[in-house]
Length: 279
View 1 (tube, one colour):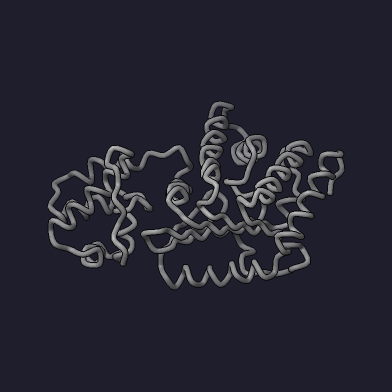
View 2 (cartoon, helix red, strand yellow; view 1 turned 60 degrees about the vertical axis):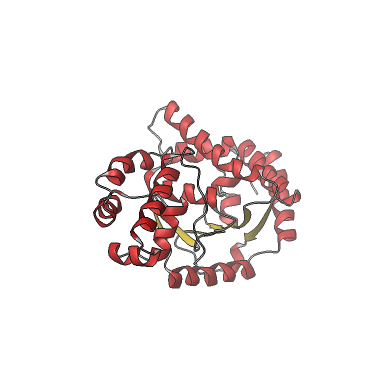
């Protein structure tokens, strides 16, 4: 297994925990697999904690202190590491995105978060939380736009999205918002910053009908799959599970329109919305 990357302990509480975990493990002479066995997790999970790919949960912090003889260091610092601007069920996935070299995502009912415009994101957040304050919605939108800055890098992470046709035809936020959102999506495609395909209605049944799937690859850690439903999310690094969803995603790609045909459809829909016509 590749060794964990060097981390700057001052960069974040999570980076500090990862660096200290690696130091404490190596000091005791344990491999990632040895330590994982004592915590009843995989060695790759330990590597992801050390590399900062995954956040440390309180139950693991307690066990690490006991196994590594670090008194209460991990218990004391775990709370600071767990603080996040994202919803609890999505926080770990958002953090993993920042370390990923490749992201492949299927979105069933909305444009993926990394590809949203502020107005579209606001409409989505307001729909999720119809009675919350504008200040909370502002914070959620700002966090989503901060995530999207991953795409400011010209090449990494590589992002490949398969977007269900339903997400493009559902008028989220109104015609003007949809026109802007689809123009933004088309612009990212034309600049070759992302690859996107539309999964048309005519495809019929497919392997991801029950939710959204995000596959993430890393330079120094095993791949992850994130599965999301309404208000819930689950990260999984089990190789069999990841392999299963890789096959599912491959089936989605071959069933979707080509990137060129997808771009044409997205631009046509954007034009219809701009003219005030529901596509």
